[in-house]
Length: 89
Image (cartoon, rainbow, N blue to C red):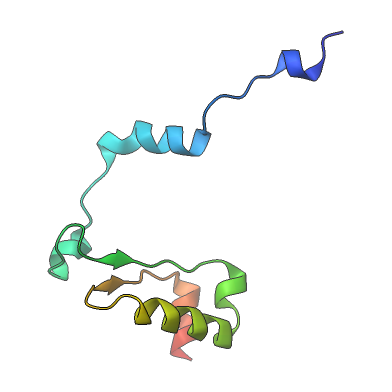
C-alpha cells in the first residue's frame, strides 16, 4: 500500500492561482470614478471578522487606528449589510 505522501501532491496556492487566472475578468470599480479617486492614491479597508466587528469598542479602536494612519489619503470602507445595520443603531 502506498503512503499518503506518494498519493497526494500539493503545488502552488489555489487562492492565488484562481485570482491570477481570473485577472483578465477584473473590472475597474465604478466607485473610484464616483468618488473621484486617483489610481494607487486611496486605501480600501475591509473589516468582516466577527472578532473585529461584533463588539463596538473593538470596532471603534480598529477604525480609529486605521483612520489616524490614513493621513491625506482617501479611505474607502465597503461594509457588509449587517455591519451597516449595527453601526446605524
